[in-house]
Length: 461
Image (cartoon, rainbow, N blue to C red; front, side, top):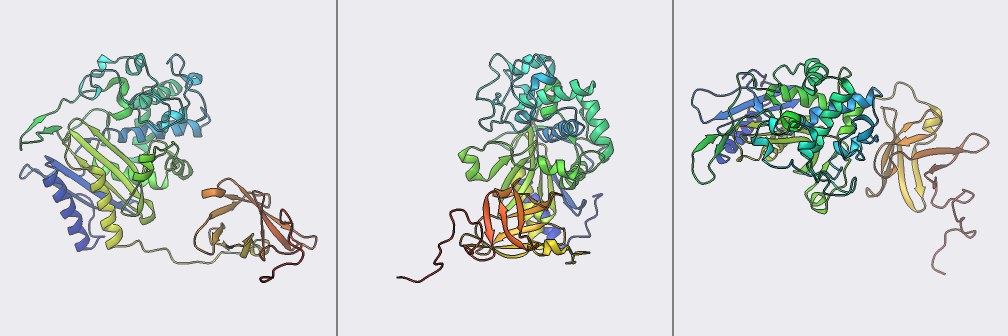
């Protein structure tokens, strides 16, 4: 193996190897490779194979299927960040003549455009892209199967449209733009549109017998932005590190954070399963932790990249079989093994370099009606509002430069917290989206909507 493994304890490494060994054997995969990333670098990699003496390593290419969509989404977000389009733009503004021009760019990114899941027949993943040379061939006569924007409905043709959008705006083929703007800057030299040796062959394993046959390897043509790419465990490990922190050469930390934010209405079953979709990324809950990434499959191949951001652990799993090991389950288990065996060591606590007295005036206990909250200033310069009961609405706030504070998450995301001061400069109360927070519950003299009873608090009359 080419990746450093000494950073994990021997027991952790053995548990990781055991997990992929079980997955390869029980899933009857001809081969399976995996990698774990922590602190932005690969800290473990492993492989299992049915061919004695030919164990693949992190440099062997596998087809990654729909993980390709995440790469395409990065390209679209780059166009947005450069001001060349807005995510709310209708497709027709930039790519006229598709017949579905009313759908927006963000509708396509989040799979909420209402487009069909697949192309008209034949099965596009096992037939050459030359059978579908134009966008009209992948959309068909009935491209919309749901109202636009109303529900999450995964659509492969939707990402073909996004690839065509990239080509139209950039004036260059999707694969050239991808190589120039993402693959080369991130050093993903083994991620390609066509396979480059060494690469795994794709196999179909018989469901009722331990025999197998090769799957066809086709160029997907205009469907390429939905699932064409080949990559390696090493390259996807580097890509995972980028998706966790961003890279100003490709996409900012703020924009990759946006990709990781739910953007599509979830079905009831998805809510129950802990599944949501962002902008080219899947969000899941497994083993009590939030994971974000993408799975992929094409005939002959299975793939998963997933990140446990709170634990700073990411995992990549690649296999060369049509069905067998569940790549997300395996990858999630790799994240869990490392996170539980070797919990992330937090950075040392450090105080603020300097304290603003006008901000310090805001911290401490506040009441919204009779609900008690604590407002805390952290070393990153943010205010955190938390219910003292442990349950209820909470959010962090950043300064807006005008004396107010903007909510960053939850119920108060985007809402402004405004400190209201008396004539002598002391803080009277906080106004948060019309809610008045006071130092005492229903404090006398405070502008509590509806007023405060003149007789104040009392017992049973």
